[in-house]
Length: 562
Image (cartoon, rainbow, N blue to C red; front, side):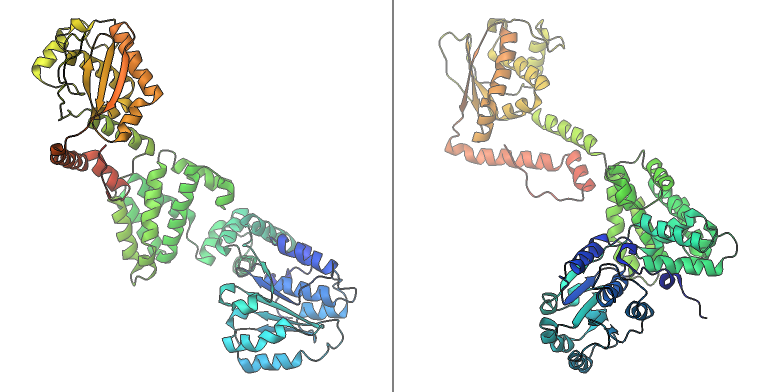
């Protein structure tokens, strides 16, 4: 008797034994119980996930001597013939080799005849997307209105290739990839039944290589069982299946994260000498850095990464000191080079070039550090001297009314005047001071502005477009030079309260704060444009801006001057 491979020997014979497709089997079982089975059913999904198996179980359930029943008896004539593949009333057709219009026309003629001894004549067409357009057209009318004794079951891995006119006449069920844990558990059960002594780590390895396909996993297990003698070890599986040892993946990724080019090239050369496929190695490394990024983010790790706990612990330790921004940078660069590696005639050299480029990229800064640097940049820009001054008149009760700039002037006289006052000793805490204690309002305002800058940088940034219009014993008038945004920002209740608080502490009394917009004369437009150009150029040439553009691989679209 010929050897029966594991995928056939342990093929499920009832809906409840199908692994990982409960959403499909439950729906079909309910439909049979309620006598609501559609005359045409389409099973779509990845290879090896149970489409043909479920099609046969559905055929048995419909033609069972005790049925139609959700659970076939598996002992009657129909059940045994379908299980062995020689049922006279169930036709399994390969769509790839029977795709001509003549063969479909023959099928269309045969559906007129009644089944031999079963309730239904069932057509199972595998890889139905391989039918030609003419064949689909020939099938269309029969599929829409088949005889009562006909049941169509289609299976495909590429449903997008099926004409919409066919899809609309079928009840579709989508099969999912089988989770690694379920594949590993099924192989473990089979090994116990077959009395195979195998390392459990080997089962994880084969389940990952199967890519969600139970058939592929059992085929790999079959191959290992045939080639190995005695206890099957992890090294046996690596050698028999030609799988790259996970140790090399960790060694290479460690070399990349630590910036060790020589170590990386040495590890790569070792893998190459062992005869491993460089394209497969690149795919494994790409997946590994994706997993490292997912682990660093730290959400749904168990669901998103199908690895045993000890490997997840190793990956957690690997990214402990690495920022998520840098991992994303690596993953992005490797993903962009995937096509180059895939179609290269010399994949090893292409892989080396891709990683050498990666070594030349500076690690991305953590986002919180970058935000801090941008805050420093904003404060530096806010500290630039204001170029425009505005003349004012006189007012009753004012000690002195002079044209002043909102920003403190960094000249020597002013520095000496400020440092000579007893309050200007480096402390920002203010004690009650009269306006007359200063030679002019400029000195008082310089101190007030400095206190606001240290306490409320965002308010100080909005005040850069303003100037002191008038300062009297009980009144402080501020004139804003800019658009309405700056005026509205300063007029906000919390900002006005902040200015009043500083003035109250500084002068020892409540001050009335008046905010007004500055009307720019027509002849000042050219000067404003020139100033705006200077500010734009200054911002564009700032080193922090250049660093941000490089880190995010971005481009400067526009510079807004407020």
